[in-house]
Amino acid sequence: MKSFFRKLVWLFQRRRKEAEVYEELQFHLEEEAEERKAEGVAPEQAKWAAHSSLGNVTLIQENVRRVWLWVFLEQFVQDIRYALRMVRKNPVFTLLATLSLALGIGANTAIFSFMDALFLRNLPVSDPASLVVLNWHAHYRTDADKRMSQQIPVIQSMSGTTYDDSTGRTAGIFPFV
Image (cartoon, rainbow, N blue to C red):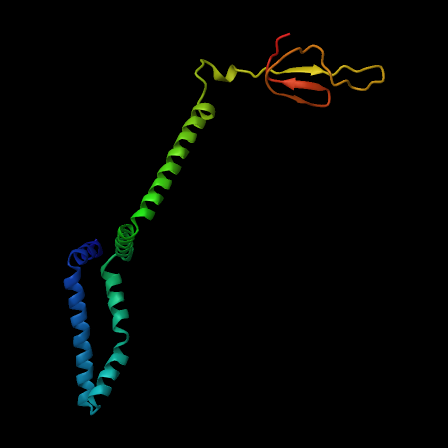
């Protein structure tokens, strides 16, 4: 729980905390350089030796920041700021992207609502499991040579689709005779 509050404090006092870290790193660099000068090393070489013994100052600052702050939150805020800059820079692209997203989401919602009402919900009847589908099947007439005739004389007129199988014609519509 301590780390949570420490990160929260760092979030609100970020500039001051980063300045403190920078000052402390500079202090350590100067102390190391002074120790090298006391050993008899030239001032420029002492600074260089202090930097090489301490390491990369920027990397140390990044590591301290990683300990004190949520990296994900910081990167998220940076991404939001970048996105807002790009929105301001390209308003036409932003408008077109927003419109295409809105149309896509709206079309998807409309299609899903239609499919939900049509296929996913139960029918508004008292016992939907007792419903059945009725199909009719008409056998082909065969002539004397046992060849199938493609005409089925029983059906005079109908509107709808049928399909043929090896024995005859089948459909889910009922023609009038």
